[in-house]
Length: 351
Ligand SMILES: Cc1cc2nc3c(=O)[nH]c(=O)nc-3n(C[C@H](O)[C@H](O)[C@H](O)COP(=O)(O)OP(=O)(O)OC[C@H]3O[C@@H](n4cnc5c(N)ncnc54)[C@H](O)[C@@H]3O)c2cc1C
Image 1: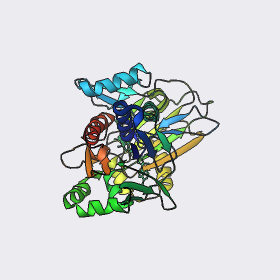
Image 2: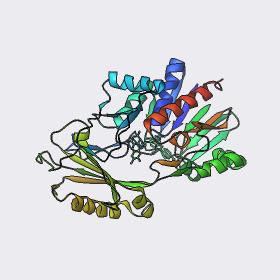
Image 3: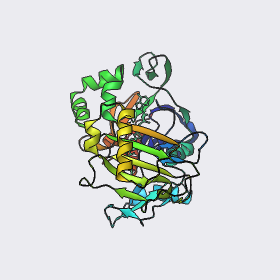
Image 4: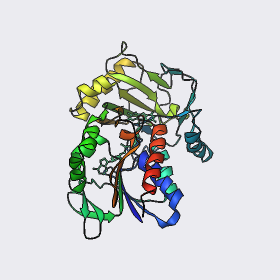
């Protein structure tokens, strides 16, 4: 059995991991992503080749476990045992809500190392820089084929797509578009999924900078303090590494993200950078590198109705939509629960 997974984010990493655990070597897992690196919104961004030890978690920041959730606890425990994650130190964090039933973890090697871990455990064939634009049924062999604008890439008996729902509606041509068009209920529900938008700015410091003159590791910015910034972290300190090279990550609030959702990320990024230096006047300005990212689809503000974890578009051959659009919320924990539901459903349909 061959399974094509479109999207190299945490949802497909978990789905691959669960499929491998269930089927062992009899399944071939082929992952395709338009990006140049794995992780999706759980991505780690590096300053430069010369300053490889300087990096920031540019999207997701930390993982939150609900202590009473015995299902997700097992996944967290495996990551702890294999030294992929460790506790977030709660000291010197400003403005974070106390949640008695929750516990937070960081990834010392960057948040993308969590996604990489599950893909490695699953032993997948990874194909990056492949922007899929078409998913089409080949009726002669009853398989779905996937293509970029330039070439036909592969085909399989099962295709799992974990791209955010608004992008599913606009990015794909071929049978997938027709299946959605012909199913009014699914089309309407996909149209109801809404995401917030945010910008991220990462500042990378050379090893010669030994102090950022900042007394906290994470700062949640209140709306009354600043109308652009929402979250700031000294990223290496957040990852329990309080030594050079230093890096800082800033996320804007969602109102700012919505206002500039269609704007050029470099122009807005410069504006955000100036905002950071005004907000933190003691922050050194001699950075070695800056990275900007626009998350047009950042976190789900309205999930697919009833949050089923997945949507089945076709049974044989199998075509499934999954990912955080169908989960309870945009979080690692919710992605675990959605991936479990997805695999439960599709494994019943594998011939
Ligand atoms: C700024 C920010 C902060 C966050 N903070 C946290 C946090 O602290 N804790 C937490 O748990 N969660 C957080 N989240 C949410 C979390 O990152 C997401 O819920 C989770 O990563 C979603 O994973 P996914 O695999 O479903 O989707 P994604 O990670 O978006 O993966 C989808 C993949 O599909 C690829 N793709 C899209 N279109 C195509 C195409 N046509 N062809 C090929 N590939 C394609 C994309 O490149 C992407 O890699 C945050 C998210 C953001 C953006």
